[in-house]
Length: 260
Image 1 (cartoon, rainbow, N blue to C red):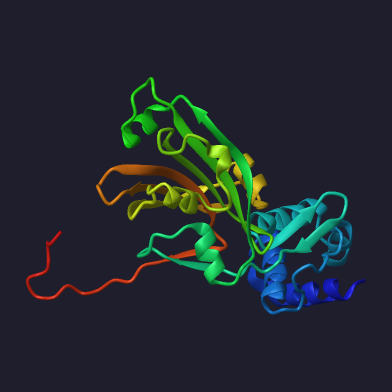
Image 2 (cartoon, helix red, strand yellow):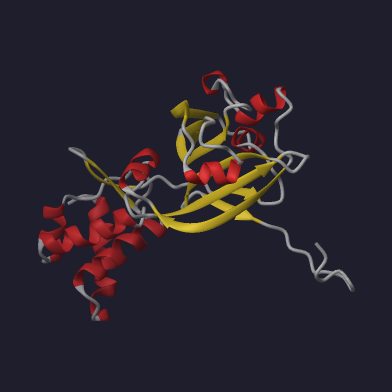
């Protein structure tokens, strides 16, 4: 039996008297072993058969515990290779008080940034895009969708929409949308963001390399020019295990409450 299995079963014995269902006991023992560093990122777990045999439980019970841990991002399964401890994700903090591009934000952290294009084109606008961007039905909308990757880890899916009059050639964008907008005098100066919890569907989970259904952050952003005109409507999905959004709050002084 492998050293990893010995470590798992040592913690399993400690929780065996808890009275909890067997799959929960096994899940806890594996999670404890990971959290204590007994088995580290990239380490392989014993096979279902080995775990079931050593713990004297059914393979169905083992499978349920492992699937729970995969959904929770503790373990990853690779087809034909087995089950492994997931890589530790270095969390990224992003301030909610500054309007920056993903490229600029990651570059300040010294992270290597790249994007995988999912879509760049001109389309008839959706009702939401018409309403937010102030477009008529006979105008076109430029859509730019990218998978944002930092240090080879996919972190976010960004889907931006702008009037085609502002971005007539989406295919000409380089590494930064905001840099392209700045060259034409259309870089936004402020934005309103709405952040909500979401569970990833199959397609987005595949792109972000996480299990379907895992928690994520859905962010809808409307960006404005200095004139007050809406310039950008973006809907993004960020990995919940990798991103923290941070806001600084200040106590209002006397007479300031209610000021715009």
